[in-house]
Length: 80
Image 1 (cartoon, rainbow, N blue to C red):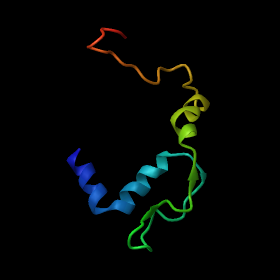
Image 2 (image 1 turned 45 degrees about the vertical axis):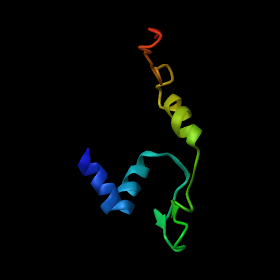
Image 3 (image 1 turned 90 degrees about the vertical axis):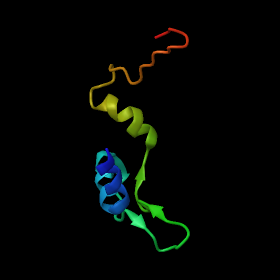
Image 4 (image 1 turned 90 degrees about the horizontal axis):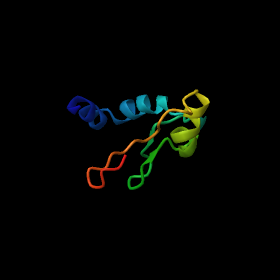
């Protein structure tokens, strides 16, 4: 895990560009990181995506709509 973290620090654009390939973009980005403003960096500045679609809908579209999305066991309440 440390090597993944180190790569995210030493090769930010390469690392996050690679990670972004696993996201469904409504409008693909052409640049990973825009550092033209010294104080306000922009990640994927011209890309457009839907967090809701990527978090929920795409999994239904991919045939996994009946899978459990989140499972929690509470040691405090003993409930599942």
